[in-house]
Image 1 (tube, helix red, strand yellow):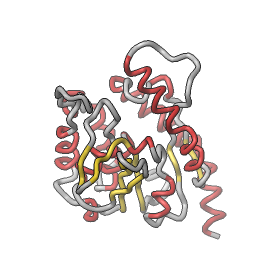
Image 2 (image 1 turned 90 degrees about the vertical axis):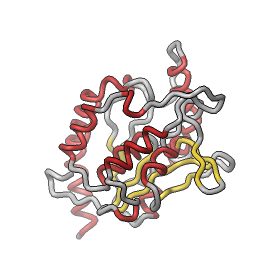
Image 3 (image 1 turned 60 degrees about the horizontal axis):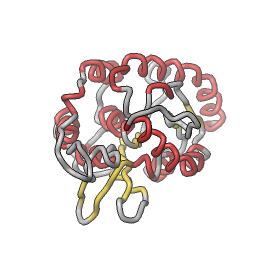
Image 4 (image 1 turned 120 degrees about the vertical axis):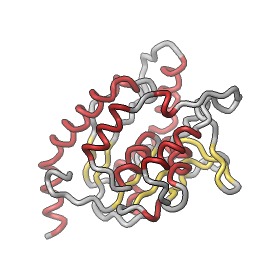
Length: 234
């Protein structure tokens, strides 16, 4: 987008998208963002705990985000931003567009049974992917009038691999499939990187490949983006 002079005025993110989105909206350049991804290790974000609600606390993730955005509140970012989480009691999507950035991202990325739910105010929140896997409607509510969605969601598979993370991936995919289609239908352009084999939670060690696949998909979508933007503007 930056290379082609396409301005970004609003960023919304769910789960891993909220991590990337918060850093981008805070003013971090794409080149710096890529470097941060490459040097980031699992130990930078993972803090293990013995709990029936999740074996990762999420405090490291919260502190990492707050450190990288310079301790600023979401409303202080140069680009409008919202992290989408799911209210644990109601199942409804909640977009955090102000307040503690790290806490909002932590809530948005709190994968059930992996991360502990995050308490904000009087409510518990879990991963936003359960209620709004690609937060197009949230972007509209934040003021976006032309929305480019990035869909890295997998679809339910008939061939589920063995192991905890394979079953977790399948569970999340089944739970979000219907709401995903509704969200994507509200986007002007959908970019879908071919990253399904990386898995929703098991592809941490393939970051460089994921970045390359994302860039390839975005470049392939540029003609459609430019055509629709031109028609929208004129």
